Image (cartoon, rainbow, N blue to C red; front, side):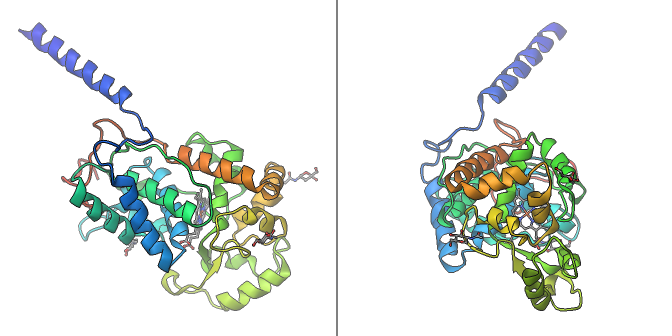
Length: 323
Ligand code: HEM
Ligand SMILES: *[C@@H]1O[C@H](CO)[C@@H](O)[C@H](O)[C@H]1NC(C)=O
Ligand SMILES: *[C@@H]1O[C@H](CO)[C@@H](O)[C@H](O)[C@H]1NC(C)=O
Ligand SMILES: CC(=O)N[C@H]1CO[C@H](CO)[C@@H](O)[C@@H]1O
């Protein structure tokens, strides 16, 4: 009797580990279970993009923050409640945006195929679509992610804007990325904005910033530091601020990086040659950026029967097991 139970247990364990290893991410994962999944996300992203092209920046940053904390599991989408904090309560998440776009895509998809398409895949697809709309590469992205059951502000450990290249690199190597990958992914700063609080210390006599840019940013940031909600912002790529292109690299080569990490990328001996290459090779950048985004979207994903498919992206289906 006991042996029978043991062997059933063994068999069940074997089965579930097999199904885990087979159920990897794949392009077109929803082709039969929810054929309209990808087009539904695309339509919602396009609708928002038409009004505000900064959605490309919103999704690139959301995707990065999701994938670099507990893997790409939509843990970033969980709304904090009075009783319980979540990743969104953590400092670096304060200015992540685009939540309402994910919610709209999710509710449209739920109406077509309930409990089938994960929120983690919606972030990934929306990022892909927004990047293409903003002039960046068009690429296939594998899907099949599951949504996580944990979202804890204490897990949020993301690189800060004033780190050195070697300090920042530690965050990327932990997730399986090389120095060149990091340089390519930082190309995400080709769109979007930063609040003055993240670069204000560079505006008075930092010799690595173009004095004309410093003067411009001093003017727009004002003299006094402001709370984040009222803090002015500046474009990270001062040349083509809404376009996913390689102009970020040419800007930082001209000392026109806004945050310290951006300028460091051009100045550090370990990355300056990579930056020069990316700046002079537009199609090379497009290809490498797409490839790096696909790999970023595969970091520590949940697949198979792990996690769940959330019905509402900002809430767990069932109470989470851990906090
Ligand atoms: C060392 C790595 C990185 C650091 C230190 C960093 C830091 C920052 C900081 C401080 C901001 C400004 C946030 C604000 O003021 O609201 C920002 C914005 C942004 N980051 Fe990064 N980031 C890094 C890597 C990445 C990566 C890998 C991506 C995506 C591929 C990315 C995409 C963006 C985008 C698009 C924005 C603009 C967001 C917006 O306009 O709302 N970043 N980043
Ligand atoms: C600025 O953008 C234009 C494209 O609009 C590009 O041709 C040019 O090389 C860019 N300049 C720099 C310095 O990035
Ligand atoms: C970079 O290399 C140059 C010489 O090739 C050297 O003078 C400089 O100190 C190096 N900088 C850093 C930060 O290692
Ligand atoms: C976008 C978002 O949910 N931001 C939250 C970040 O954390 C602060 C503090 O807990 C909340 O007030 C914000 O709503």
